[in-house]
Length: 305
Image (cartoon, rainbow, N blue to C red; front, top):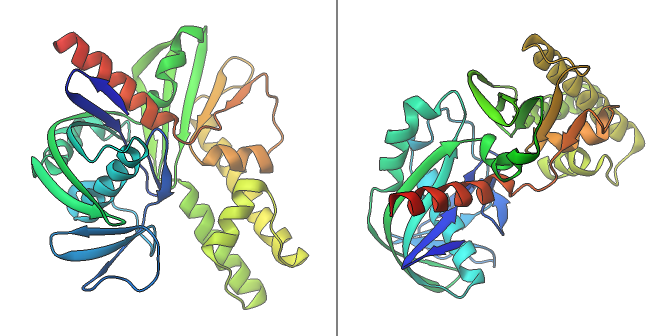
């Protein structure tokens, strides 16, 4: 969160796997209830309905403005960030992002989607939020995660933002983004998740939970049978090899190009690929993009002022 005069800027990275703000992270999932849920957890109360935030499964959608879920998840993300500062009433400017290849065509529709109501009242975990959403800035994904470090980039770099749904690629020359050399590939971490679960089911006739697979992706291991663990690790290793095959198809050469990896896919590379840290930098901060959105919005609003 950043403050500019009477305006509160909240950056939100609305990923297909996790929703992130500068200081919070939770799964991109939401389940609706007509009455208050019985068990404790993150509960959003909006427009007469109750929603369990972080529970269920949100499938991939190319256009995030095509349903209500991302709007509700955005409200929950804003509330989680503001709650840290005990701020329950605010004039807001949202700072968000879209995949590199889609930001040009979807920016305005997504902006209007998030600005659908200027005055918004809702509750999260019993706390009443009364907000006025007066602005929304939309920036390219990936680029935002490194924008505050650009001054240190010399030579040619390839930024690979590997999220749950997509991989965004952007070349930078002496810290300058090359707009003609950016692409979005639908080869996100969720594809690896699906393959891992299907392989375990086919090999052992048993289902493994998303939570277990995510833990292996994130840490390299989990407390499960060694054969199951080896199976999932093999799938993850094959997926990472596929990632690098895609990178090479976009002229990535480790001898001449520095690779910077943002997003959750970086953990897969860290645990399932042998690489030279002098050639590949993995950004561990999963909230880096949300922080970058805030930074970009703050600078833009300062210029406009």
